[in-house]
Structures are given as structure tokens and as C-alpha cells.
Length: 444
Ligand code: PLP
Image (cartoon, rainbow, N blue to C red):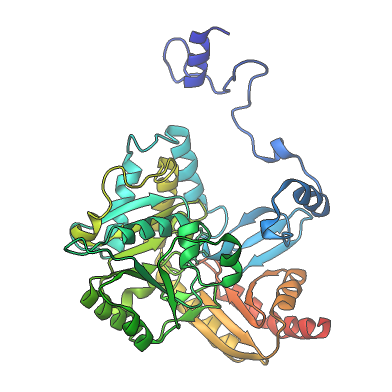
């Protein structure tokens, strides 16, 4: 094939410049079908066979996956053996509109078929429109800005670098950063330095320095730690990975006062709690404060990977200047189109009001179940404690019975289902839960 033919083929155009060929041809060989799904590439086999191939081909950082999932629709997913599950975890608070949402799918497919990636030497309409939309939804004041990343940890990493640039008015070094005990902010080195769990941190020492963890929810401890040597305080309004632990009422306001007085940034990590998860755009919305930055990811792309850092106001937004941070994929046209489509549905179908209603219904129902000792959370980010250390066994019993839930602790179950979970689906789980608890206790 000549180089002219190659470039024509790659552009998908016929020689007359018209709409062009449908099947793309590579550097040679057989034509590639214009339409196919991944099954055509990977084939089909049983769950057990997939898992055996997994263990010999994938790095063991996630342990053994619980199931091999092949398909989803709304709040349901199916495994490689054809078994159906009600997904009450939503890819850990990611699948905001469930699986295979037709509108989001269609927008992603059409954007990819139009312009998939451009690099950050360029921009695209979806990137700009999404930034504007996020500034609006997060009620960011004039002069606020957005940086797009590809995941939660990258959004936090950007926020960490923002904090490092907060040197104070006379460029006095501010080397300390405060986070909370129980915090989870991600697994890359900066985010890991903010993450509290020793088992995650210890194997990777030394981590970026200057981070101190203060007791969760203790405002006096925070006040005592925050002085003018502190660059930033990182807080999750609800600690998701620690078992869905909301900060006590008044804590965010007190943290705002302490950070403002010390010239420290208040950075809210809403990677798990943001974008409607709690029935509000931000879980911190009701606290009546303006933070300096917010990190977002998880639900933002409706299942498509995207993260974002929102910097509030012109001064904070000016802390990172040209060349000081970047990413190849961040804010690419497909990811930003996916997020715009997700936000469009969340807004136009009153999903946030639904989250508040069904979340309240689910939490009220959970509180009446024998063996449930405490129910926490907001909207559809729910944690509940059990009267015995059987949470992992409940996860297993749930899978057997066709429910996906998660155990962030030995006696804690977390639910973070798609935000479109119906009351009937919530009731189905509530009705099954007593038997799941019994099975879990019997198998201990
Ligand atoms: N921050 C919070 C609050 C999270 O819950 C998570 C993930 O669970 C992260 C950051 C890291 O996000 P990701 O797993 O997309 O890197």
C-alpha cells in the first residue's frame, strides 16, 4: 500500500474526499470490520477459566477478583457464567447512571467517532463546556478554574502540587500539610502520603514529606495543628474507604476558619462523595463554606475515567502556572463528553432528588434489620455496621444470592449503588439482608 493510500485509509476518506470507507484498513492484511464488540477480540469462556488466565497475566495487586463481569444494564450486571447481580456498589461509586446508559453510551460513541484525542497542545469544545459546567455546579466564584485528570488519585496529586505552591504572601515556606486519620486519597505517591493507612504507606517509604495526620473529627486537634507553616488541609466530607464516616456537624466550618486564619488552603476531596452521590452536587454543599479546591472523579464520567481539580477564586487558581503540571490524556474529548452526558442526565432527570429519597428509604430500612448496629452516610453512599465481624462473609453470601456489596472493614458494609437504583431494587436487598447475615454467621 502506498503512503498516499495509507493516509487516505487512516482518514477514512475515499479518494474523492467524500464521507469515505467504513472498514478501516491497517498497514496491510485483512480489512478491519467497521462494527464489532470486544467479544470478537477476546472470545468467550467460563468465569473459572478467565480467572485462571487473570492470575497468570495480571499483577496481583487486587488479589483474586470476585467475579468476571461481562455485561451490565442499569443496576444489573451479569458474570461470564450468565449469573445476574444487583449492583449495589456501582464500581465503587462510579457508575452513577448504572451500566450501559443509552444516552451516555451514545454520546461517547459519537464523540469517539468524531474526535477521540487531541493532546493538551489543543483543546476541544467538550473540555471547555465541562469546565464551565463544573464551575457552575460547584458554585465556584469568579476566577475559579478546572484541571482535568484521569482518575481520583491524579486529581488529588494535582491538589498536592497546588498545596506545595502555597508559599504564603512573603514566600515564607509552608512545608506542612494536614490530613485526617482514616483518610484515603489515592495510591500515587503524593496521594498516598495523604492516605493514612499504614499498611498502604509503609512499603513505599519514603513518601513525599510534610504530611501529618490528626485525629478524625477532632476540631481542637485540627486547630492545634494548623498554623502559618501549614500549606493545606485535605478533608473528605465523608470518609468512604474508612467505612462511610461523615465529619461531625460544624467541622468543615471550623476547618475553614482555622485554614483561613493560617493562610492554609482548605482542599476537599469529593472524589467519592461528589457529583450527586449524596443527593447534592457536593457533599460539602450544606456546610456553607467556600473551599479553596475540590477534587472530583468516580461518578463524574458515569463509568468513563475522568478526574478533576476545581480551584476556587483567582488567587488559588494562579498557584499552578503554565508548565507546572500536565497529563497526556486529561480532559480528552471523549472523557469530557462522557462527563457532560452524565451531568446532563443527572440534571434533567432530577436524579439528585431521587438519590435523597431512595437513600433515605434504604437507610431507614437498614436500621430495622436485626444485626445492623449503626447506619451512616448520606444519599446513596451508605455504610452500616454489623454486630459481628462477618462483613467479608456477607459480601460472599451476597454474591451467591446475586447482590454486589463491599466490606471496607471487618464489620462494616458499604453500599454505593448507581444513583438510579429504584426503591423496588433497594427493597429487594433489604428483604434479602437478614438471610445474608445468617448465612455469613453460619459460615464463620
Ligand atoms: N480520594 C477519595 C476520597 C477516594 O475515595 C478515592 C478512591 O477510592 C481516591 C481519592 C482515589 O481515586 P482513584 O481510585 O480513582 O485513583
